[in-house]
Length: 461
Length: 158
View: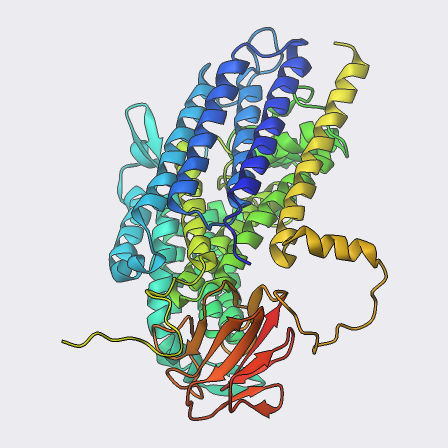
């Protein structure tokens, strides 16, 4: 029985905002013993933004999934709360100092980015009324994606380098910086979906069986090799392992979803392992990442290269199962804790228990995205939703796996939580796209023009 | 702020965070199984033990809410049932567009009548099968009985 379920969404939104308000209040109580100064303004502003988003969904996508907006709201709100908590470090009598200082208005700026993100979300819902209109611009989106990806590599490093990391991934003009890769991710997901819908039959059917695996023909390997080469170029010229893993993973999974052939996954994994091992031998900064990952506590690593990772691990250890309470930890010891390492700040202050809840919330967003992919009937939208949901999961896996030392650490943003506008806006646009696809999937079939019986009266002449 | 108060706030925050997660999972659950109608709930309460296997031949008056594809290229797709008829076939204007070489353009239709769903073959080449029976005339479809169209299998679900 299809129902809009906007009431459920509204109730869940109230719940999400309440959790955020509670968290915001408890940061102040944990730090100074009193409620934070601008609490009413910040929480009120956030609630108004979310309300606007909710009414936009009612207007533009009434059949969309009821859960995506509340889940994204909660993550975004908790991100703002943590940024407020880190902004207070070293201010108003609170201890500590951050390695990369935050401005006194970081929370307000993050709230402003949230507003832009919600505007992007509404824009996607309002402009793209049917997912398939994007299919017409497959190659346009491919070109946009590649250009966005390549821009930082071509610019001089004082514009494109992120201070303190050596990664060339941003465009810094004036006081503002944007990271084009976040948007490139969306554009390339559209491109891959459009390309694979057109080409999937040849990729799926041609080829022969070997050892129980369907191998593709050599000439059909072209696209996957090009994607692999492009991701390696990103790795070499932008020193950004995370992004290159993200793009290659996105392509491999979408080709797998399109063709249902395991061989693509195996080929992709083999290429990626080969590429990263070769890169770690050839390029110093990649080899260093492997060293940090494997031997963080050896020799001079804990106070040198691996300092950030080790501090993050100590932070999470200090937090333990229940955490130190919001405002009660010492996350400021970890460099860049407000962007790449915000997960360790959460681990320290809300503990394993809270971090698990956050990961489940990510998992639920991914599940809703895959659900939309399964239930939609348009193959292009199916692939796009699957790809977007997967890339969110992969991004969370790469950064959380990195800071917890499961895989080599690579600096990418945590969707919705990290400080920074590009990631937030791109994540909201992605939620907008997923909700558009789920709206099309859940919309009841169109009404017949006239309610004809078994026979139909036709007027002649 | 005493340590005890802070401890209570910390635990309370974790508790409401997890309550949110549980509520979200609850929404996912109702989305999967549906919460339509207090009648069904009341019925469940009145006879709490109903472990016997569901009989597919139960009339299913107004009970089917979804049409689920259980096999074929579109497996997993589900359509909500309204009071409108559902056409199935390869034609682009069908309600359920099949990408199935063994289906005809306008293969079959399902329509509600007196609280039952009826399947009717629209003169397809390979025929429509309800369970094992070929559909030669409009036939009522009980909930949970497979309808075979080409390589695709559909089922009505509650």
